[in-house]
Length: 119
Image (cartoon, rainbow, N blue to C red; front, top):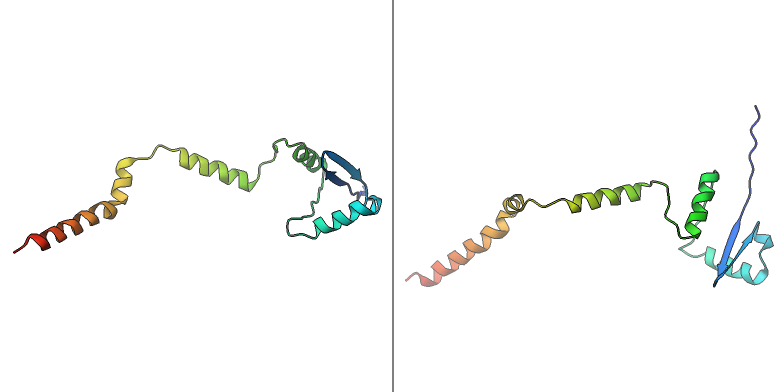
């Protein structure tokens, strides 16, 4: 069975409330092409490679401002961090772990008091 690979490009350019779609950079009008070149040469630009229809659907969802249905390592780690933060703290365990912060000022205060009251 032979394999067929199709290569295509789609360029979305949004200026103001207007979005235009082009098939190649050559199809972009010169004034927009200059703005496109300036914006794609910046540090905040990236190339997106979409390998299947699911990727195309995710790009459309992102353009429309809808949440992604994909699971990513970032979203998974953020969910795990939120679960850790939402646990009810054990106050006694926290006190035991922070004993030096509680005990040390009391000991220093007692030593200073003894130093000044001793005759």
